[in-house]
Image 1 (cartoon, helix red, strand yellow):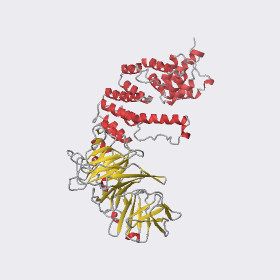
Image 2 (tube, helix red, strand yellow; image 1 turned 180 degrees about the vertical axis):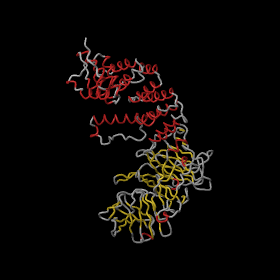
Image 3 (cartoon, helix red, strand yellow; image 1 turned 60 degrees about the vertical axis):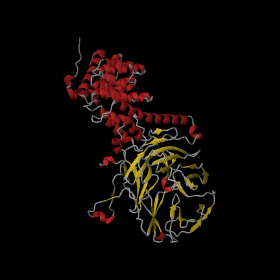
Image 4 (cartoon, one colour; image 1 turned 45 degrees about the horizontal axis):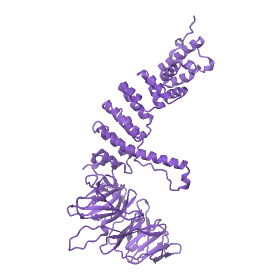
Length: 628
């Protein structure tokens, strides 16, 4: 299997810590994502490492018995150590200082070195699970362990949420069914908190294989079963959530699958059933880098044992190998998925939800317009519509925000936030720069297909009521002119397929020498836009369309009053000597007609242009005054 086939990988720079052994115990704190390596109960040292801080925290503490659990408060100010089943020792952590411990079972007041009981609930608890991202704790109650009681912590208060029951699969008469902590995970997917239950046997006897059931746990209201992910296999599983995808690892086959609950599934009236987005694949093989002086020798990196029984998986995306001393973040690779999902519409739905999707989406667009992988027009239309749907959503959100700010709502509503532009928002300049401008240059492409694709993109923008940028219309016109399809150009303009704009009118003016009717088409467009004539001249000159500007002025009869210097300046800037000659000669003739002499008057400030003309063409090329 080539590297292009693996869509999951371990991060390049894992957190390294001392391997677990009889002397060294390893703990993981899910809230701070820190690994604690505790040697000899802390007497010979504790080393704390997190994924972001490359400087580990090291300290010693008295060995007061076996450490069952150890964690820091959120800013590493208070250390909590549990050594018995009933007490937790707290200590204000000051690096390089002796710490005084204080012991109790409730809120910590570090200044007073005491704790304060805020609230208590009496429950029989089998086990608990905490989700730091959402500050929700889940307590397992009842004999079957399957009634879960959530609590939410916020600003020093604890609120009880409605309890709910997890449906256990049917079990043989001899065994008592119960809910194992191992089969439950909590994670945020698409901004919503879910409880994930790994059900090893389906509730319906005719269905084989395990499934993951997602219960949505809202802030208000009851928990509801929403999604079922069909695994179609049995065995040992572990769950992660990466980039809003639920990843299910299968130890027996050493492969993983991903599920996307935003993609369309099969809805039965109450829950949606989902199948894996892609075929099962292994995580990309990983080489353990050799550190220290050994790296100098010719030793090759050691392949890491993937899906090892010593792996421990934490939410959302953490994999720890205690025996090897590594903590990795799991990552999704989008490029390989492009070739594994042949349905372009579904591929777009999938990619548009991913965090780092922009360049991959642009490469998919380029690929579907390539000679070898050319997609059909309906497929291309679907892809453009999906892109523009996201683009329009963002434009509308921006507009609503701007209107709210203008109306002064930002002061009265602190919740008003500027919409975030995600990578899924691909605007016209993105598509033009990265896809269409290169596509129209391809000589091997049939020009009818090229024009159809350009018009399809413009149709899609119009459908979503997005104003089409003039450079897209220019691209269409240039392509039509290149292939002499003037009848088509005429139709597009006549039926307003191409929207009126000043840049477009100027482009048409410049086409007059190839296609004479373009002049009138352009003037009609400028009249519809009620543009001032001098503005049109300025635009044409700025685009180096000097002859077109002159023709336009002659067409409206204003050529006797224009500044010779302005036109000669523009002609000189083009570095086209013959063009300069033509413009210079035109003004000599005008001078002759109006004043009886081809020479420029001092007031016209054309001395440098006369000198330039002589330098290029010689004195003899100057027009001689004609006498009658």
